[in-house]
Image (cartoon, helix red, strand yellow):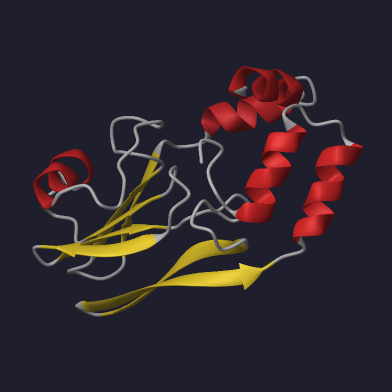
Length: 161
C-alpha cells in the first residue's frame, strides 16, 4: 500500500523537491531557556519509522525515546496519536497529526509548548478542518488506496483498525 503511495507521490515531484526532502534534518534540538532543552524527532531518536505507543511502560519509553539526560522535553509524531506524558520529571509529547489523526477525532492535531525560564507548559491543540474537502481531493486526483484513506480521514482511525 505505502509503496503505491510513494510511487504516486514521487512521480509528482521534481529534483528540487527531492533535494529539499533530502536536506531536511532527522531531528531538531532547541534551547528554550537555560534549563529547558528540547529534542524533537519523527518516531524515535534513532529511527524515522519505529512505533512506540503511548501506553509503552516507563522503562521502555525512557530507553527508546528519552535517552538524552540533558533534555527535559521530547517531541515526536509518527504514530498519529497525540499525548503528553511525564516520566521522572521529564516530558514526552506526541504532536498527533495535522491531516491523518488516528485517535477517533477527525481534527488536525498539534502540540503547543510555552516556556518561561525554568517552567514549561505543553498542550495538545485540535482544529476542525473540512474532511469532505479532503475526501474530494483524494477522489479528484485518483490517489492510490483512496478508499482506505477516505475511511481513515473520515473516522480518524489507523488503516489497520
